[in-house]
Image (cartoon, rainbow, N blue to C red; front, side, top):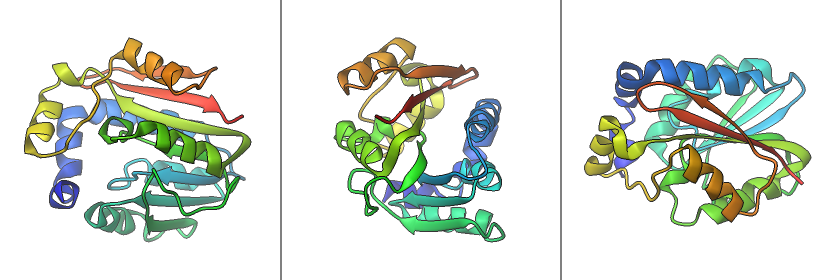
Length: 196
């Protein structure tokens, strides 16, 4: 699998090419957390968001479908006792309804064949009134890194800019979404909405 193969170099590539954006995005997402939150993180990758979220919440369940990525997350979070790292599929979550106060799904929605299924699953497992946070890189078509990853086998299904990302949520039937763009070489647009 592509993500298993790149897990060992992913952080280095991300930090060199897009470190400023990643720091701003992870800091912003962490700022949305509260100390009593039970949080689900889908597509945790190498734990870039996990290490920022975990110190601010009661409990973090970090999931990914790539064992290579999970190995990196386990390594980074092994001293954080409130983190559970588990294999998981964002389109078929194994958790009960209303299990979490917040869910984060960073930089994954553009990879999915059926993003609606993922949105529906996030809404199912987050409590009513809870928060769903979906950061996504925008301007893929202008990004050297995105083109390299895609040619190597990442398999991007969607390419968003700020306008098409807003339209995406309208198509998914999600209203009252706020957006914050973290600018840089490959900007990240953080979508945040309350679960209803």
